[in-house]
Image 1 (cartoon, helix red, strand yellow):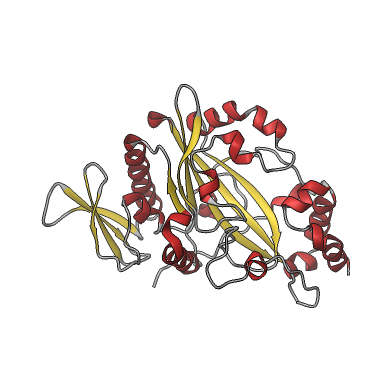
Image 2: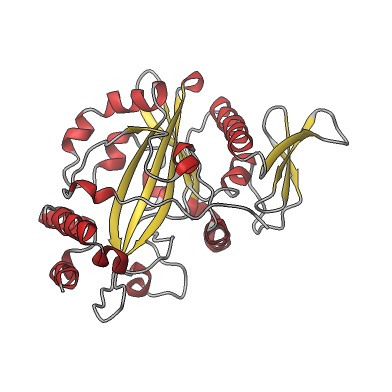
Length: 328
């Protein structure tokens, strides 16, 4: 049995104002979750839920959720090396590396969370694995990203531009990997209402991601289910209405959840790149309603949204009902 802590808990609307801002804090800031707050990748007792979601996504359409664009070989090697080092350092009981018993030029990563053994060479090429995952791992990057809960984005830059060079995205919040891969910071965030000031500082922010940090930030939205995967394109045989969700029913004990994204950033300056982790968590609406302080803060944050932000966040069509339910 895996001995993992419960999921970390966060409440991003703690200022009572909805704002579009970088909101960067140093990774390791105490949010009340002990050691989990210090880790780039937080593994918790819900790992099996994230793992099953990633398996479903790859079975549906692997290329819909995993994309690369101008992902330099040196960058991919550095990312894989860093992920292995970080996982083994932060979770020595779950991850360990040894030299292969049959070939001293190969290494084996043991993953207790999935009972997988992943063999790779000195250039961080995937050689073999005992995994039964379907479809099989495409490469070492894919294998590693499938062994922790968070989604992962890699941002790379050169002398003239920055771009998203790799995405392993199985828990998207109504956006598609294919729409973001290869695009720069400004293009990626262009659909967000109120992003203008942030985008003006895009160059400085990308430099900070790569050269400084590590950082943590949070994003939040309102949802009416706990499904991780909200890709804008539904899988076959599922209607768009059902897949989209956001169907508010005030008769339910918890007609909504606060969907929280724990976003972590870690720079790899040696390859002019940064890792961006996205770990989705949920806070039950009934819990928020029963807590006077959180109830007030959430209502205040919602009411501070512009009409454009309410539409973007998917609450415009049930906004009044949501506020009434919180006040009831």
